[in-house]
Length: 329
Image 1 (cartoon, rainbow, N blue to C red):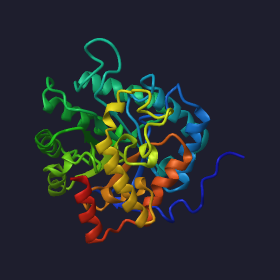
Image 2 (image 1 turned 135 degrees about the horizontal axis):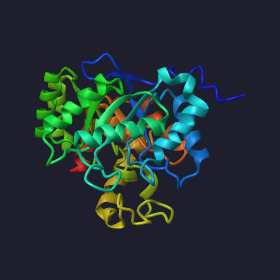
Image 3 (image 1 turned 120 degrees about the horizontal axis):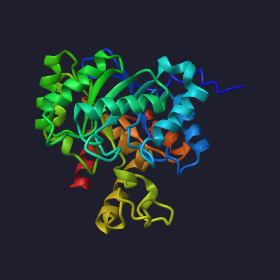
Image 4 (image 1 turned 90 degrees about the horizontal axis):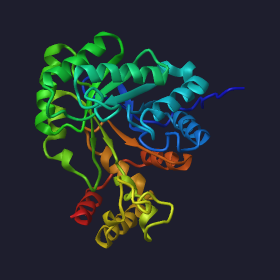
């Protein structure tokens, strides 16, 4: 017998309306940035997707360049969709992006109409889908006119290749301009995906308030600061960790004694809340009214279960919030 999802999958997940749209997203979404390429074990990736869906995670986030190699995460997720989830397509929100280098030459990067149209066509083929639910422009292009990039997002919705469009990694001023163009075109921006965590709070400096004013949803990636806001590094750098491998995402020099001291104090507070540090870090983000969802990554099923467990305690006392601010400062 094939995979049958849990009948209780919607019982405990929290779903938030995305801006002023008709769409609701799970408070915890699952990103395939890491651990879904060809260098990882396929059956582990498959087990994580199945468990995530069992827990009520309906939103799975990809990009054309996720791997390695680029495109591999979409291909592997497409295999999992075909094997396990094709009957549940209408229960899923599947997003992908384009904006980073995908193929050599002048047409495989950034934000031109040529690149974005070709990239989404390739993504749909890898995923085995007729459309994605959300298509993001992954980063601003300093050379392509914003009008060209936004009109291409509008075109792809009108062609039926995406239901909604979003922005990722846009600063406040670029976001404001892009939102105005999309609104005028008749394809309003659904959501903005930004890096946001206790250690990375740039979104609080105008972006979240802009999105609230414009009725646009938001989703935070790297909510655990690349693993720093977990118990992973409380006692040094484990040999099998991302930092130990000196990856371009997290290096040993990022893990200073001062940073670890902060993490330990946060971990102590999380313990008084009967939460793991990761759970408290996620709950702290979701306290923000404007934040629709938090985008987690994982390398094993237990990490997904731990993150979703954050939903069991989303409330903070004023004293706890003050203590967090004091620790972070």
